Image (cartoon, rainbow, N blue to C red; front, side, top):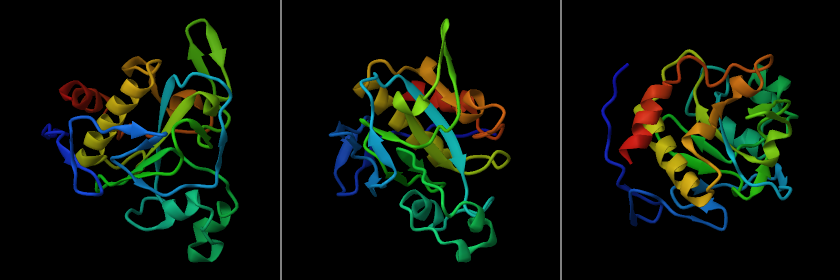
Length: 206
């Protein structure tokens, strides 16, 4: 699928133009709407050095509802949909959620640990590292493994990535990976529908 590269001039929730790169203050990104999740804790003294991409849709393959936000804030009830009975007790979160509209919601400040990676490992040169939540930032894209993601999502994801790489020097385009890669026996997201080449093209355009 082909996309048009869109200008990265954007406005924050107060209507203020921020230019090409949005600022991060006290762990919060000004591009995002802030909805703090209780599912977080202190990071150990590890340098933030990995960006981990996920996908999520609730109910599965349905978009635009309030249920992801409710899941990450422990307000999802089992009787709202049959699938929710299997996840209503989960205590999970991500730092950012990028909806298909391009709206970005931040649930956890970046300097704190979100609960997103689960059992996983990252091959960091000659070292295999575990406990990825300790040193990673988790970004959820509203979507699934088979449905193409939206151009607006790639654009906002690229803006977030650029801001994060500026804020945390150990992050780089080479240290961005998928949930599927760090947990291949459990996870497949964001799946083959995610266009890595276009994402990197968006990054290069900023």
